[in-house]
Length: 209
Image 1 (cartoon, rainbow, N blue to C red):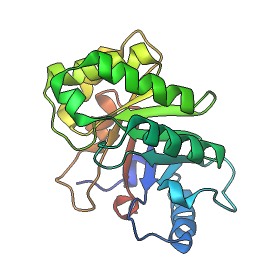
Image 2: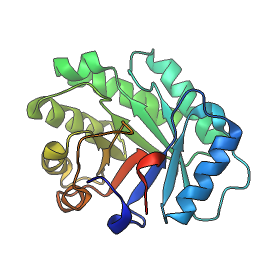
Image 3: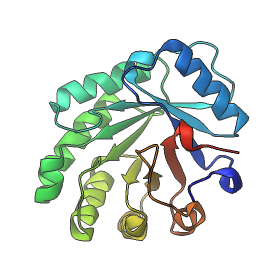
Image 4: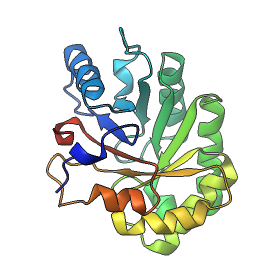
């Protein structure tokens, strides 16, 4: 079961990435996230800046979402504008063609461009999106993230969390697990945490009592 009831707290991020979401929806997301003790929320870049953000709640936005098939400079601009307007972290989907090809140089180049657009203390989170990758390609992606200075890598398959954790061991990077669908297969969030993920990002509809 994917209910978040017993893994509430700083481990959870509520997302609202529906392209039809409104300012009122964003306000409702903030309220629900606080009611469920989430540490962060993730919204489209067009929702920034946000008003009346509860103290202590981190704001995340996306760039290149969901396909990653955008020019790197477009993603960088999108991420930069979100950070300038109040986001604490940018979640960016890399070009999946480079990931599945194992093209480390291309991945590093893209992440470096993004890192320049998302300067510290803002955090840069990189993802492969919803493109399936095998363990070897996931390892190459994680190593590129380490080399290029990202802060977080995103994994979409529970069984691959240990692969990513091992690939970033010894660096400052952390691993986050992401659910994208409001009706996902059964996921044991305790297993996600025990595998080494420092957080789980999921649609707000899944964050239940």
